[in-house]
Length: 278
Length: 271
Image (cartoon, helix red, strand yellow):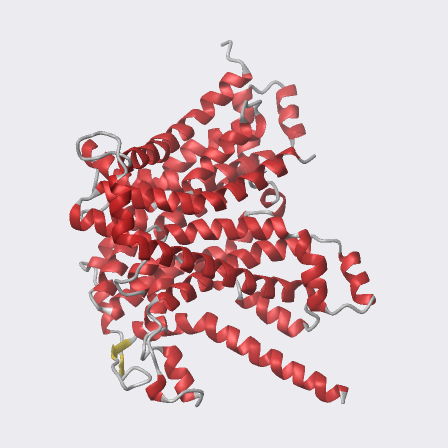
């Protein structure tokens, strides 16, 4: 047996890599090639023409939904993580800590079903508002459209971002934060000006992962919102299931790759920076 | 003056906390209500009649839901077996051996999670169709395993990295072979982390919808697909009960994960 350690290591990791290659890299290349191929087999941008002609509205819709959801998720997560780290009332911190993690492990499809009933015109949300006298029964509207998608995404992703952020905030040097407090800065100011810049990388990574997740979810736009306008994931499924139109579906797929590419580059750059740090 | 101000602040905080709790628990409460509502229509704010008729329908041994639950659990177990068979050696190599291009390999395992997956799955379905494994349990297991591999590999690598090297050296010094050292020292010490990664993969598989939607239909109906069909068919009761069944393992996991995933392992994930 004259296997060097390197060869052994490569041998051990090879089966896992092979699975990723066959079930991710190969279909990825397949989708890109298919998007740029015309029915006769030559190179063409025909599929992209069709994709833009039919779905330019949905492309914009998808970008707006995902960016808005990420922005709101960031705000909510900073609020929660900030309260958990800097909060002075043990009751509030305790209740918040016990509550905020719940949606973290709830599957998207379950979240979608929850919201489908909760946000409906006669859902529990409107009914509660009416019962509390905050709203007249006739004012009740259904939120099962773009607002529903955003609400579901923020509801589902905020605990994830808040969890990572709270972890990063907890490992910050307490002395600096206390010093700021002693100098008379408000807790809000300490959070925004002192704590947040130090944990920005963590926040960014969590948001990028959420961004890609939102771009991948099929169940939420299908179950929470009506048919038009809708997100690109639903359009792709429709092109396949209704027409078997792989070219246009793959062109839409390449467009979603491009949308997430910006986010992915941010993530990889952060990963590399961490790698080169001592 | 300042007492009034602090009272006002406390009241404001209480209102904010209540609103937060409502936003968080409201959707789940609505789900729970639907699962026991036999009749519920406008303008009634709460179900008109309560009952467990739909629970009985779902839990009837011959019902769709029991079959789907069986399929889901079977697929999840197979997925864990496949993922661990691949990730234990890979994790060990990443944590302990001199591996060229280590960070590149780490990123390769992340890739399936770092790309929007729908476009990948439609092409996987096409490839599987040509291979004749579309609509089979095998096809769904492979897709779930590829998706879950990032968790199992990264967590397994972290678990192996957290094992004290001196203990391995001690075993080698008293004459144990490398293989024996691995199976009697390293693997048992890393076991809690490896089990945690298996639980992660199990849950990912149980909850997975998109891949099964493209690769499994129409023959393989897992719980998420049953939920989807029931919801789209307007049967809110069956959809809600299915959703509640899916919630059970997730909630158990959230309560017990800290027992398996120790902080020293968690700190090494992705490193």
